Every structure is written in structure tokens, then in C-alpha cells.
Image 1: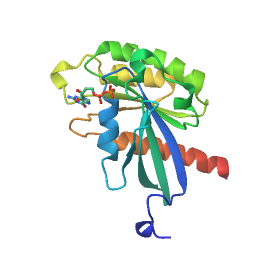
Image 2: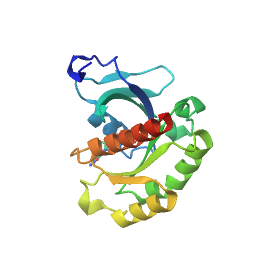
Image 3: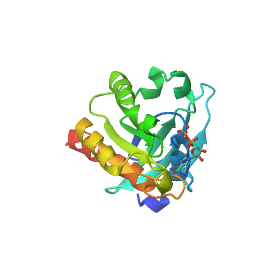
Image 4: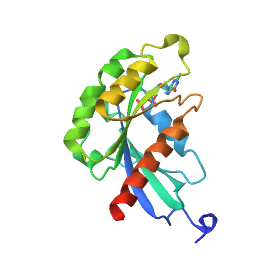
Length: 184
Ligand code: GDP
């Protein structure tokens, strides 16, 4: 079926992707920046987690990404198993203007590895690049950590929109090709 005649409920692949990282790094804003589109649907379940979805075309497949946001639960270290269950991708976000949020990344990776499958696609995301004069974490520091931990890496700004689209589409592309390879 040509993609333009499909509805958002008619897709080839549904991918659950989770957002993690310290409070205030910009997870919710990255999510809304990416999903505030024609196909966006938002949900606010009472358990305190939110997710939003967006459909993307990847290699001629219509891929629906369901992105989960912690909705502030990280403040209480109360992220549950259900949050990670079934996730095939993760964006681990820090704020380039606040070093402590970067220093927390290893803790987030440990939590992720405890709960998630080992073949999950993980991207390290340094957000708030628009605040150039407040930068505390360099691009090189981000890159070095990503390399050391075997993660994809990108810097974004949810405020001016730069690279937010690229962050999610690269993760979706990587997952899509991994799933395809397993199928073949
Ligand atoms: P979360 O707690 O990780 O979900 O973070 P939020 O998305 O709620 O953002 C926390 C604060 O940072 C809010 O005041 C946002 O307006 C601000 N913020 C988020 N992303 C950016 C960004 O890219 N640039 C700037 N300048 N502010 C941002």
C-alpha cells in the first residue's frame, strides 16, 4: 500500500524507545519537538509515565516509534521495570550546560543494562547546545564517553530544534536495520 494512503495505525514495525537521564535535561522537550507533527498522539496514563508516537518511513517500511518519557519519575528513582520492558532503543540524555547531568550518565547506563536487553540501540544525547556561553561539557567529552561505552552520539537543542529529528531517526534507522538482519 502506498504510504500516503495509510493511517497512523497501519505500520510495518512498532518500536518502543525510552528516554532517560537526570531531571531537567530536556527529555520532555525533545519528545514534544519530535512528535508535535501530524501523526503525533500523546497519552498520559495514570501510572505517571507518558509516551508519544510518530510514524517514520525507514527503508520503505512505515515504522511507528513509541517514545516513553519518565514524566519526572527519575527524581524519585522510581522508574519501574515496566518502563524498560520491551524497549528496543534508548536515548540517554544529559544537559551540556550542567556537568553533574553528564557525570550521572554511567549510573543511567548501569540501570539501563540491568533492565534492558543487551542488543538495545543506545544513543548518548547532549542537549541544550543553543546555550553556547553556558557550556560545561565539551563535544569531545561526549564523544569520548560514547566511544568508551559503545553508544551512538549526538548533540541537540530542543529549544532551536537542531538535531532532534536526526537523533530519533538515526536510532530508528539503526533498530530497523538490526531487526531486518535478524529476520533475514
Ligand atoms: P526533563 O525533566 O528532562 O523532561 O526536561 P524538560 O524537557 O522538562 O526541560 C527542562 C527545562 O529545560 C525546561 O525549562 C526547558 O524549557 C529547558 N530546555 C529543554 N531543552 C532545552 C534546550 O535545548 N535549550 C534550552 N535553552 N532549554 C531547554
